[in-house]
Length: 353
Ligand SMILES: NC(=O)c1ccc[n+]([C@@H]2O[C@H](COP(=O)([O-])OP(=O)(O)OC[C@H]3O[C@@H](n4cnc5c(N)ncnc54)[C@H](O)[C@@H]3O)[C@@H](O)[C@H]2O)c1
Image 1 (spheres, rainbow, N blue to C red):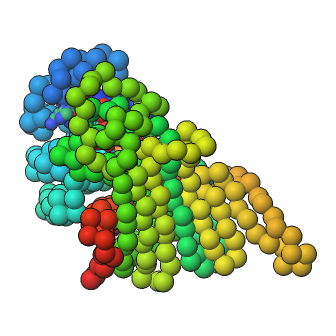
Image 2 (tube, protein in one colour):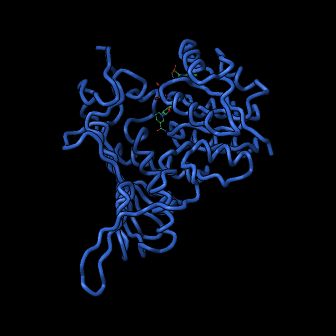
Image 3 (cartoon, protein in one colour):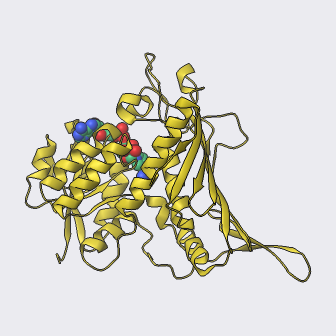
């Protein structure tokens, strides 16, 4: 086992800054090299985070013997091609969400990881919050009884990421709010409930704001007027699972509603219910019939660092089990694709296996 992990970054965009800070705060890891198509961005992030080397081409990261692991944080279209190259070069990879442009591509990356013998994971940061972990523990202890339904939602009111960027381009992003933020809540919901065996999916997606130049604000405003926006800014779906349970997913980048941002996973069990992100559980007193609302105190949880990069690093150092497995990431990608397909065809999508 190595004693420390040296990272090379592909992509020096907005998310790279907090990711570099997170990695550098681990006592046995550091970011040693960074590459971006925009060399100025690479230099800026390198300077801010004491990253020694800046490169012009991804292949320079892949051929650097001082890089053990690659973090891929670029527009979605380039996730899988760069991940496969990194794996072939013998690097471990932590990839930003969503996994891929589509399920077929995701399978190719998973296959490449298997062949390389290297670790590939997805950086699903929402899984690691203490409350989410605690709720998962309660699910596993049987506190909720049988969980027959869950609602996962992330509603942003004016949350289209800056119109005119790659986020609104189907060619570069694969999809809109479903693939950008729906992926987080769907992944979290399946992680907490442990339900990774979907059998059918029904979905509807809409493009009602971005295409009219509306719906941005909270994530910055465009300076451009020639804006192309051809992805969904609203998505709703219903997923059935092998055990008979179901999940409903509602995601918006933009809509008319009362608050600017709302996100949660709500659990419906035979013995108790929960608002996962609010940390509240609901039960009924058997004797009095009174409804009880309890605030959960997370206490000791498996990933005390509560950090996606720490989990990946500790896994490579041989001290921790990897939280986000490829099998799980593939299921999430498959459901996202099926929701989009169902919306396009107007039919329910069934999974054979
Ligand atoms: N986990 C999270 O919560 C979270 C949050 C934000 C973004 N993300 C993900 O991170 C990734 C990057 O998002 P961002 O907000 O930093 O985007 P961004 O637009 O701020 O930055 C993207 C960067 O990638 C560079 N780039 C584009 N193509 C490249 C290529 N082929 N090779 C190298 N560099 C290239 C661009 O020059 C830009 O600097 C996306 O996949 C996004 O979905 C995840």
